[in-house]
Length: 495
Image 1 (cartoon, one colour):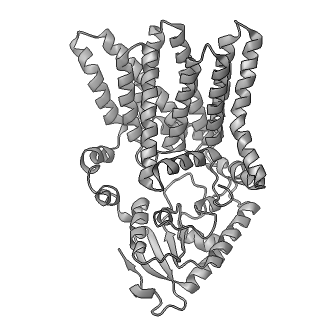
Image 2 (image 1 turned 180 degrees about the vertical axis):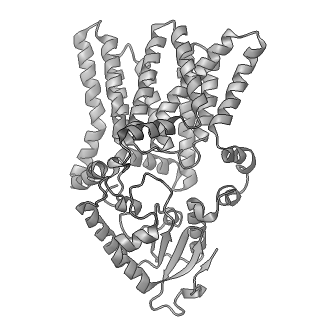
Image 3 (image 1 turned 90 degrees about the vertical axis):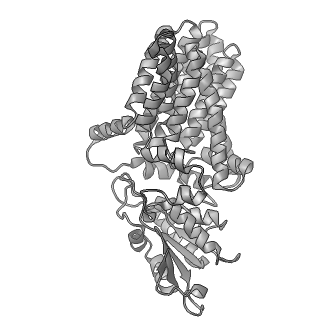
């Protein structure tokens, strides 16, 4: 990462993806299986925490059902994302912290390493370091202030270990500059300056709060009621401590979302995950108090049905009972109500299937688009280290591209032109996101505006052979009889 392939994500997610590739192979399905296994482990932790919080097994069961519904409701785009893994690692850190509460050194070391790795996934979640630090300090200060501060120091040291190892790794490779440019410089100079709204911070905060609770008001009410009930029902010091820790994690999850300012649903997983734990605990406590009455028997199914009705998109409900056991193409490519031009995943899958019939082992492929799914499916390395074009053309808040971005644009152009790939895929339109700070909403327009040499190279040397949904496929035409090769689609066909 950052050397052979440029990306602005921090190193933690690359490590997770490497583990997924090693365990399940190089496929989209393999990664989905990895995420499925991770979420199953998360359900076990959710069950344990909800049961501990309330003292009821039913709380764990209900919390698992609620979280499963919530996570499924995120859809394919917002599952398998960084916050999904961050939430599970936070739960594991909480469980370890309580399991080793009488053994301060293992607790400090293990939770420190976990939280340090979470920081490597997204630095915003370093907000959890003080949460665990105050927890450990309060746990042991009365017994021995010296031991409490030593444990705190040990915890802080091991929080830094994962980052220090990454710095050492890139330092030995002589690539610290690229690590800095991709992760720190780009994020602070460009990515973190979004959104470029002129409404002011107050209006931005209102917009963020609206996005947080859209479609999930009922879950929040259940979670808030559950938090109140669990606090009142807490009998042991362990339950009260767990309550405080989970409330703090919900707060840091919300703060991390607000700090990012992107309004992306998966960024709220750590916040809503904790809310769901409280919702399960509160539902079980309510049912236990109403046991023996008619309403008591209906609390569980009514709560679950309301969660489904309020948090799931109707298309996801339809997919669950109608499409999920159909063939891959019927379920994922022919999405009901979505034209192929607006379905980026389907377009890339169909484009890869089309090219698989003609592409030779020595042929190179370039994907000028938001992500190179077609190249991944065809197992082709890209000509340049820049795999996602949109990251090169995002603008800082002032709308002016930085000199280093200009340098990267020229590097990308030079690499693609030098490689002379046989096939050139142009993915258009750009994914619809109102918070991208761009001058061009169309990648075809961006190609002309930001990459004039590449546009000229494409015009002079390539011919469009087919249009598949949102993908235009161009083929190298020089020294090839008939211009477009064996298919002879000189005027540009469509599928």
